[in-house]
Length: 272
Image 1 (cartoon, rainbow, N blue to C red):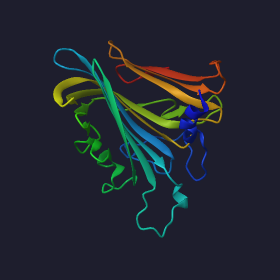
Image 2: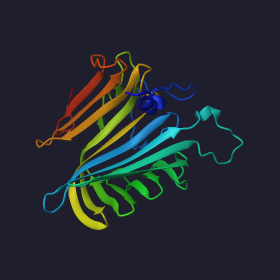
Image 3: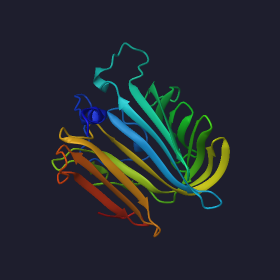
Image 4: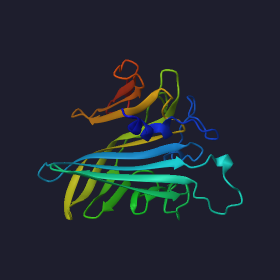
């Protein structure tokens, strides 16, 4: 990797005092952990879907909201009435049999304020940046509805599952380095998606499988790591496969990469 490319991931390797570090042994609690965690520096809500239209033609969508704490909570100025102390980045993409389009937006916001331009609330669950949103449509977390549109491309999908979230790693703590360090991480890989795409202004009814990942922490990479690769697969058997590797700063030698994966059975039980 070039130095310029490595700098893209620098924020993920920085250890900033004042933010809470993810550690094993903490119990995830729902619905509160669907929402934002401003005591931690970085987190995201990451949705992907594999879809088909009435003819069987394949499509894909992605919707992601990233939150980054600008200042540790104990360093905020108590004299400021409103502090937009969170930086949000939203990303959306649509893939068709012939093309791929993607867009992103940035905004300052508040972690738990529904009146801000960008933010996340846990009860009821809502994550948004402008009109790109992922929202609960009932008193429970599920069903969800995701919406995003940019110009002549976009999507509106409903998402439902009868299975609980899958806690990744060790009861929700996902180790990212052989010497420790990591994040809190859970998935909802059993979502069924129905709705419509907008491609070049044309509306296309679609349905298929979707996967939502949630992750938060304060230092995702250690000083000797450059970045990561992540894969998720919906298998014809109904099982789900997840695999990631953290790339070590060892040149062409990949023996030091930290690799983790699991097979998620149809009942939600994992096999590493």
